[in-house]
Structures are given as structure tokens and as C-alpha cells.
Image (tube, rainbow, N blue to C red):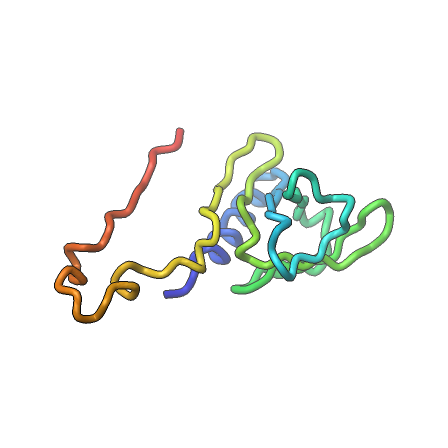
Amino acid sequence: MLSSRPYLVRAINEWIVDSGLTPHLLVSADHAGLDVPESTIKDGRVVLNIAPSAVRDLLIDSEMVTFVARFGGVSRAVTVPINAVEAVYARENGRGMMFPAEEGDETPESEAADPGDDNSGPERKTRPNLKVVK
């Protein structure tokens, strides 16, 4: 199954922009393929302003978030692997969505089970864990 992360990042970003707020990405700096200025990394994370007024050529696809932004007055291309995105939120009120670590690398239990194992049926699958956020 495809990862829902790129779809949710695009949707939450659009919702924040349509609300007249400033979308930010919280990104883990530990992922290979991350290309951001070293000065933006603090405590292993990067916060990136992706508002239309702050970036150019924003593209959020199934593998990467790419755009051009200015850092210290210098224009620079930024590349963020989609699995490095930990959250997308509005700067003004903090509303948005956080994502679990390494969502795309998880192996479903039904695929990880031994094919001859009698407990590999639907009753063995774990239930979704949802929380009410106010």
C-alpha cells in the first residue's frame, strides 16, 4: 500500500495556506538525501517555512519535497525526503499533523509472519490506534 504521508502533507499544507496561515515542516536531519543549509539544523531537526511567499517551485511528491528558498539572502534549492517529514503545522497556532517515525519502512505483521504459521490470519492483525486531539 502507498504511504499516506505525501498526500497528508499536501492536504495539510493547502489547508493551512487557505486559512491564511504560515505552513512549516518539521524535518528529521538524520535522513540520507536531505539537502538543507547546515546552519538550519538544530538538535537533529530542521524547521522549514514553506509558505508561498517564502518559497518558489514547491513540489510535494511521493518521494521528496523540493523547493527553492532564500537562506541569509542566498537562493538555495532544498530537497527533503518525504519520510524525513515529522510534522506539517501552522506557525501561528501550531495546528497541523505529526507523523510516526519511519512510516514507510514498516512491514505489516501478516507479511512478516511465517507462511506456515496458523496465527497469520486476520485475527492476528493489530487494531488501529487512534487518539482524539482537541
